[in-house]
Image (tube, rainbow, N blue to C red; front, side, top):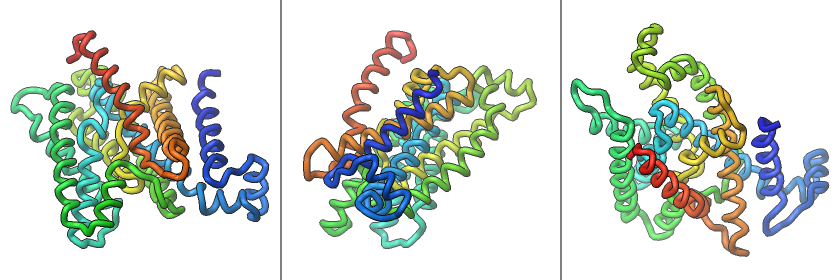
Length: 324
């Protein structure tokens, strides 16, 4: 019964997001539009809210799965692509490309930015002859995140006023003016990367227990760790490419999903993280749209309001446990 909580909540959130807005529609109108392709329901599904909602679900699932992979790999609930600076690295790469007038594919630019940020974190946290504590990676990632955010703000100064305002809105995390192309883009990336993530279940299970145990089982620990981290970074970059560097979704998704679904095995925890990420981003976007009538707030504002208290609570809990 508990396993059905997350899927049911996600379906209800999707329906609510499709029905609520400046042009409200009922469930029967949506059903009629889906079956016939005519009427207000069809307009909402095809143009007004359908692409936005499906982009939110796909981007949220990508962020949630990315956060679940990082938190499992580093055995630290603070290890997430947004906290460690990888999403802001992707955002910086896109802003720089736009400011430089480059016409490169956005997903590739986002992936490159996220991977460069990950390599910088690894290099700055690396200590020759010693293993790097997960907390060190998190703290170095925080520094990289602040630096890339500052550089993104500086890069905005080279853009015309209107473009800079829109870019700033996107850097907050935005799902405005999403089309089916954006939804298809993030879902395609999510499908491919999820398959790769599932192919790493065995080494991830071993690494979660102990690196020496993983080596004893014939797993090349360093290679597996880099492969899993790269998959997680690319998942976050896929979400950033369509929704901007939305904060706190990846951080919150896995703990929330695991608690709701009471998932025990690794595969169940990863799936719960992905579904919870989709649920959080969908509900956050609905809240952002409904908060102020006539004003479409960036979804990152809502996730920031939800996520900041969670981060403070998590930090206080880790300090009490002696993890910080």
